[in-house]
Length: 443
Image (tube, rainbow, N blue to C red):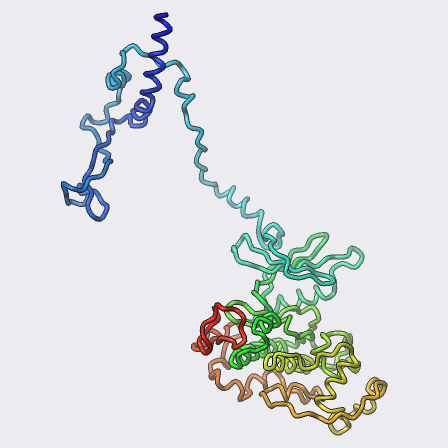
């Protein structure tokens, strides 16, 4: 009975005194805690040389005067007022040890290099796939994030057919974009090739021009139209100087970021142009933005094919509606001729001998006057060679209000690097996050 009582008392006092035992073990050099006076700046008065009798901290660490003397088991027992012959069972304290995870050891250079080698350019593991942005016949586009830079990217996954390999559109896009470096052309960051797909990694832009116009409720600021048109012409002029035709201009292929920078994208139908009269495929551009010469079967074209599309896009930005929204080739031609008039030998030399033109038997339409909004009227012309070039359009007086500095920008400099160039609030903007009309709104 006595032994049982003694054992219970021992266990009771051991548990009660355990925190103090651990405290003493943690401070073997004789460190004790006392109140310390604190200054108004949060520093110790002792450290800062100031003092106050009213402000005190609950804790101060002070070294005892008995220089680093180890506390013996006898000292511990005396402090706790326990019998000196108490002995703790072996492994007793281990039962109360905290299972805290060990600190990570610094990674060696060899291990760090091995870790970084798991991600990098040309590796699918480098990118995190997020939301699906769109899907087409050959490709699916996802929003993604790079593990290397933590920046958002656009992942264009092109499905590969084992019999055919990579689609020719993908090969064109890669071969062209790797050589095109311009502020108004989307940047191709990386190319990843696997057995099942070819992934093109582009910079991420928040929306396209079609989405932007929809958000505006079909009413865009005239000032913003001018800035977007100038950027479109800058990117196009750069391509044409390098003998590259886009051939598929439409609002959906003009991407816009949150700064208002517009960039040409989707060069799947583009092609390097070595000779202006080289024969290509007839089916190259979306119906609404096709010039009449292509609609009538012409396979001899050069840079003017893109300028017709520029005129149509400009009109759409100004009015909020497409200029020639035809549903078929014949319907598209009817819409064009209703506005420009049915072409004659005077307005389009050689048209009357075109077999395609004679097949449709168009009625005699009279031309309607186009409001002379800058380059539009010189873009939408029957004769390809009479359409203004992108370089000439950039120098049109319409852009004079943007200042002279925009004409001397380097290829990789944004128009928004020029002082006082910024977008304004669009009158029909549906978002409520923009300031009042006339104030800068983008970004």
